[in-house]
Image (cartoon, rainbow, N blue to C red; front, side):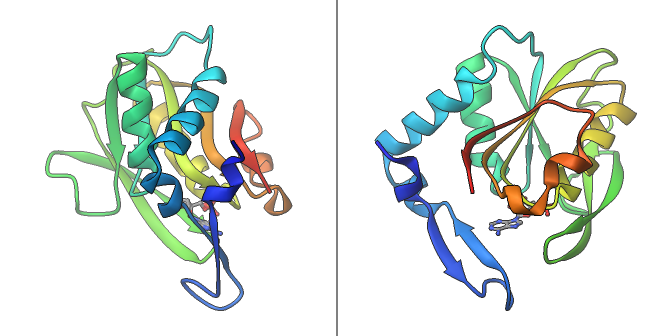
Length: 170
Ligand code: AMP
């Protein structure tokens, strides 16, 4: 199975100059979804992990699947003012704009070993902010994993202090 066949390129979304990687065909197909999940799991074999963090919103899909397979808790990192309990936040740059991300203060215990998941590693600003949130709460990021990495944007450089794994690379 060729996973990339399930990623649809949308030119000019959400604004001009962006080639958007649409994962909805992958979400539609249970076999492709399973294959993708297996690849992500192969990247965390032998790693000791306590919790999985998924980034709003497309990091929630495989983030929860990963947490379920690994029998671990799932933590959503969300856009501002979405989480109801007390939060901490970090600012980040997107490939198309800037924003802030939040996490519940009690989601991570000191020393927790955390797997960070999102759909796309682009410039790395999002992942960097998420790692900062995890670390602010005393967690240790054991890996940042992604469905795909857009290597030409050098996102790895922004999170060079962390292990990066991607199921697909472009
Ligand atoms: P970045 O912070 O630049 O690494 O951007 C990563 C975040 O933005 C992820 O949460 C992605 O969902 C989203 N993103 C950035 N670029 C793209 C793209 N070309 N296609 C789809 N999603 C993207």
